[in-house]
Image 1 (cartoon, one colour):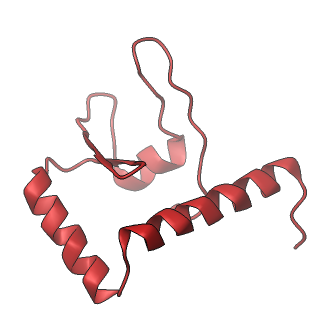
Image 2: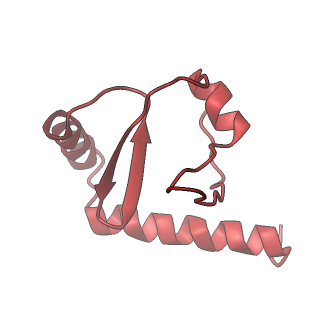
Length: 96
């Protein structure tokens, strides 16, 4: 599976609906009738095509974070850096 490394912007519409970018849907094999699980982790929203229970996913994330020596703050800082990078690229202000 190829991971999307550049954040994509999506807009909520209607009754909180959003459209996932085609490359994400294709990479994950999502179809029109696919079911996703959504939960909040700090200020992040996580969607997964697998039906995971919060405790199981939480434990898996905690285990992986410990393995990588990461804190939730580390993840949120990286999210901020990625958002900034994306914004700069979108505005054409990032130097390559």
